[in-house]
Length: 208
Image 1 (cartoon, rainbow, N blue to C red):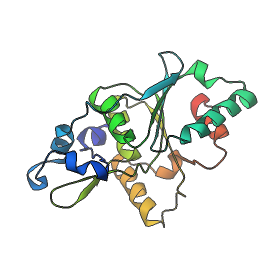
Image 2 (cartoon, rainbow, N blue to C red):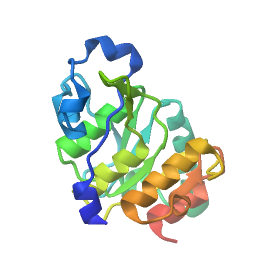
Image 3 (cartoon, helix red, strand yellow):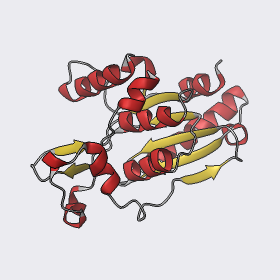
Image 4 (cartoon, rainbow, N blue to C red):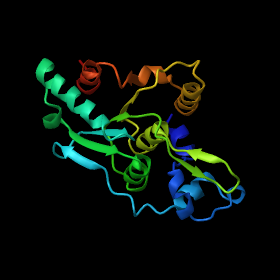
């Protein structure tokens, strides 16, 4: 699995509205890694540390900032029902918004920050358009590969509002991508964003 991660050439998402600001790159003469490495990451801020002290951390990735409200509810439920204070036991790092993919890639793959636990949205909704007209997607699975490339022992879950049904062509793509890169089944690392997630997050973080 680690070899697959090391050998994997990561992809990147760019907001379609920002395409005019990109460096002109001729896709046929560049590898995807070269395209990724050529982009300017200085304009992307670091993810926000919202609570906790340095130590074991949780990395939350989502393109919708309002999703953090759901995590606040989950953590409050865990504190009330299971008497565990997530913000005391972990450092919580939130990476959200329209540039979440950029920030996450910079923070993890470029700056080599180690992640211990991660809860990742799968679809981030931003693309880079190459000169041959193709788009390259940078999604939650790519960030998972970034995380495992820095820390192969990291524990990862995916949380999405999509129903993880392989008959759905969109999700079939992510199923196949995750299996190809890791040899594992995506559905074993997933909980739905709209479910009552507190119990699953509690079990994920505390192993109980």
